Image (cartoon, rainbow, N blue to C red; front, side, top):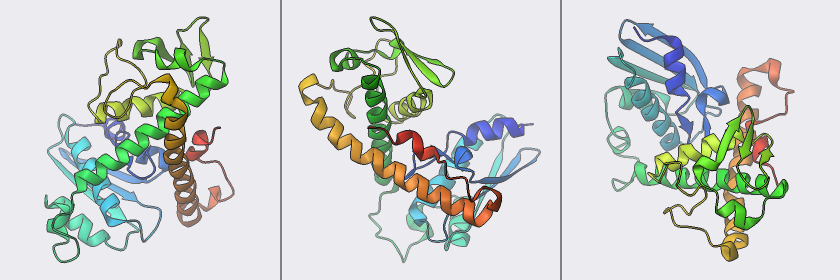
Length: 258
């Protein structure tokens, strides 16, 4: 029998594509039911008008991730608070694609995977941007940062320890490293300890002379995700968590760095 803890661990791998944050951390997941090998996941999106392609991707990912757990033989995913929830739930739970679910409403050339890739790249750039800027803040040179290997950076609670000369602690950066490495895995980039930590999206080195222009570009992706995350969290709290409606903190806050 799968456990609730296993289900939530699997759900932590499901990210809102636009907000680059696990749906578990955003508070989207409402209920998990386990009946022998049949798991039902019920989740809520922040607004009634959330883009159906994003919602469809999240439902697909929930079904895929939970379905990988040993002992799970069937997964039912139900989304709430979306204008097309009935259609999405029907399509997902009968194994239809996005185009098959909305045959008269979307371009038959619509490529959900291409859209997914676009947002993985945005998340990659955003997390990379914030990590580099945090490292600069503690005094690491651009040359040192760009020469770091994955094995040179270790998680220490909420912070990072960087094996440099001298070693440096990067406050409150552990989550961003984990999200960044998550995106590297999704993009099938090198992940061994000797691989360069910071590369382009095609796994090419970043030249030190090109870094200022590169960071201007990645900053726009980071701020876009930060603002959208804060907005969506606020909408979710106002509708469904009245006890938290005056809590103005956001998971998007950690991306607000200069």
